[in-house]
Image (cartoon, rainbow over all chains, first blue to last red; front, side):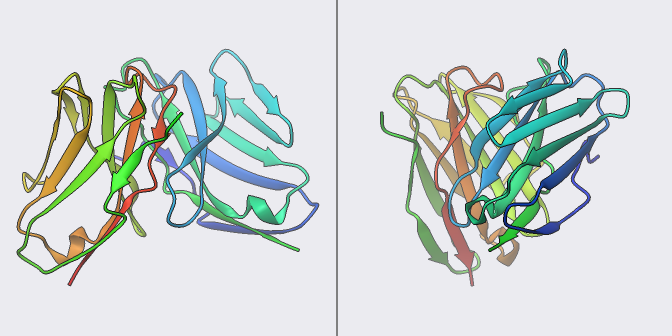
Length: 113
Length: 113
């Protein structure tokens, strides 16, 4: 039962361009959504989040968009930088999540200089 | 403020052996959860502990177990190791385990040969 899907295993973009990472979910009870960034041999680090009462949250170069009717969220990185190259995990959450994080399988972003 | 510390960082074990991994959470965090990362399955939840009590367990065989001590430090144990147990094991701590404020350690890379 895969509640979170990140259908693009990898994405390659040029430095300075926009990176768009997508995430789809099935559980309508999710009420906030987290994005984590992970470098090899390190643990994930929290990047940005959005509550279900919003449809957009912006933090510097990172913006997350939420479309509740489509059960879809996306992470936009503008402009992309080589240091953004990492695996990005989408992690929806709800009050009934029973003390665990649920992750998509991740998207490997490569930003080419 | 010290982060989440996992030891050891790397481990090589033989099939059939057992292994114990350790996690020291951020001071003041009472929730510790464990995740397994494999290339094909992404990040999968193993279990969560809060004040020495396991509150939730993921869909893993009974060979995987854990515990939490009174100082919130946690250990996980895998008995009768199988080749498929080779993975990066990540520990995350948070104040209450409710979704926000998770901080991950750098993980323990376990290789079973």
